[in-house]
Image (cartoon, rainbow, N blue to C red; front, side, top):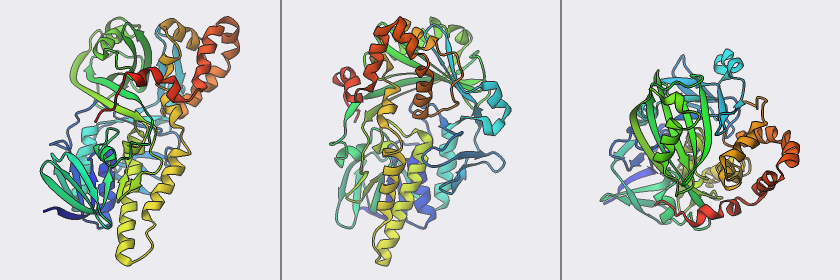
Amino acid sequence: MARKYDAIVVGAGPAGFLAAKAAGENGLDVALLERKSDPIQLTRACAQSLVSTNEYYFGNLLRYNARDKHLCFSSDGFSFKYDGPYRDLYNLVMYTPNGHKVEFGDYKELKKKGDNGRVGISFDKEALFQCLLEQVKTYNVDVFPGINVQKVTSTADSVTAEGSGQSFEGRYLIAADGCNSRVAEVMGFNKDRNYYCNFCGISYYLSGVESVEPDQIVKSTAFLKDGHAHLYLLPRPVEGEYNFSVVSIDPRTDLEAAAEYFMKEAFSAPWFRKAKQLRAFSAACNCYSPVIKPYKDRVLLAGDVGSTQELEITGAMISGWKAGQAVTTAVLEENLGLEITGISQYLDWWIKAYINYYNHEDYMRGMALPYLLSTNEEIDYLFGYIKETLPACWNPYTGSKAMGQGMAKVIPIIQKERPEILQKLQKRELPISQVLAEVTKISKPVL
């Protein structure tokens, strides 16, 4: 017999925890189902940073209140305890294969501003999950680890989730099980989406890294013999540790070989002479066009489930909290015999804050440069002319716009000196499905 609840939340990640917290603190009976046997344990590669602290992101200005140890989302008026370690991130630096750097924000000037100069925050995700797990339990949310939901069925007034030999019935279900969501797949949400590729990565916790500045994000790109890869290097909130990630959307890329290249052969090799590996992770994430209407048959999508690859942790938490509030409102409206508006409020927000405000094709174009250019030399040439400091950001959407500002000034030079490169770059204006057609053919969704 199914256990009965007002709301079922599938997935105990940033979106799922916030959805369960929102519904639980409003008095709903909530079941939070998590596939992992330990909801706190981190098992997949993640940059573990909160993006866009110097600008609005999904309508919110994010602030970490260090005095009271709370993450605060001012516009939507919610916060939650995070008492784990953190580190301010003050700018992003992109290096070309030969080591030329393009800076997004003046590191020294931004660091002088302290909290008001940071573009992001590095944090410990396991500590975050520990804090959120404790908080949802204070609101009597029932947490069920080790539940791998495989089937979802709906009736006119309820929805049932089944997995790992157990069954849960709720008035509504919030699917927060990530970009490879099983719930979205079995409910048919992916049928009308464009599948582009997989975003795959490996990451290591490292000690002994000798990077240029301790509080900045480093990115680089390189072509290898079997594909291409991007490097991301972020300081962890634990003193002396870094999060080193190598990612690619090309399934032919040997990520371990790419990591060896960045650590032993590339311009960045001196940074890693004394590096020691502490932990290792991997991840494979589906990249789709977004779900336009993330609701049907009493199932509401939250966080990365309906987005293109991901909303970033910041966006996932906002979306999860919004979903929990929406389901709470819908349940209360049903109980009171009122018109049901809670779900439509969420859907309106989704269209306004995500679908219309952020261009998912711009997000994918940030990964598509290797499908426009074809050699390390072309990347070195293209970005070598950008000498000025670009606007400070750690945001996959505004970052591409900031780069566009820098490129606009050098296009006349490229047109004169290397018209063949400009011709390649013009393909960037094509629909992203055409730009990525090659990699789409050799990729398949992760289920």
